[in-house]
Length: 256
Image (cartoon, rainbow, N blue to C red; front, side, top):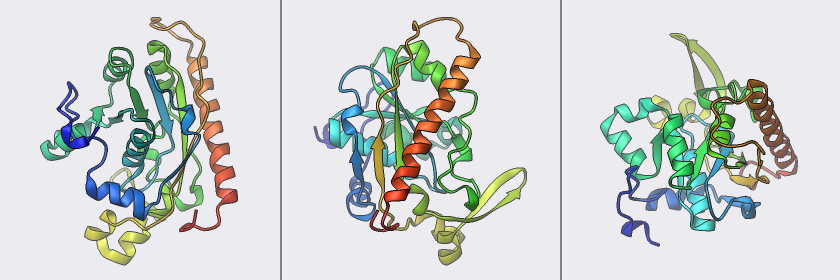
């Protein structure tokens, strides 16, 4: 199905995950390759969980575009509500599958629409981590994404991404007004206006891990906090192990 023929759905999605420019970057600049795509469910809802990186993260575009290319299934990405305060940005995000990251929205997507929903549990910590923590996954919060999957009764599908941290490599981080602000090589070479917009041509590889089936009844009012945190930590460990193995086999940043 052509993206041009898509009509807006109730979430505002109308153009699909990538316009022609991003598709060209995906195929020719980042040369994205997938492993384990058979682990993405072909039917029913599932929560996709991945590592998050880069000053201008490309992972939010790479994963939906790749999965739709490979499986034909659309992916909805949960995004911070702050992005939707800007009319142009919010409309663009919605058109490409972005949805305000609220538990109610996630639940409706997973249960009523039986969709694939993408979340980055590292949140804002992933893109701004210091150089010494490259490809080291940050804490997955308090396991809120696990609770979302439990309530909806859907599996969690971990996806490890290698190469995304090399598209905008961080040289240092600074604490400004209570926020961590990274200095990237892109900004150092190209300046503060152009630098954040330009991505280096790092090879990106995506590895889909086997789905995690939680084995608890859906729709309960309460789930043990220990279950959610332990499951979140286990999934973080699976992703970290996969990333470590991928990095060990990598020939170079450009070749992958």
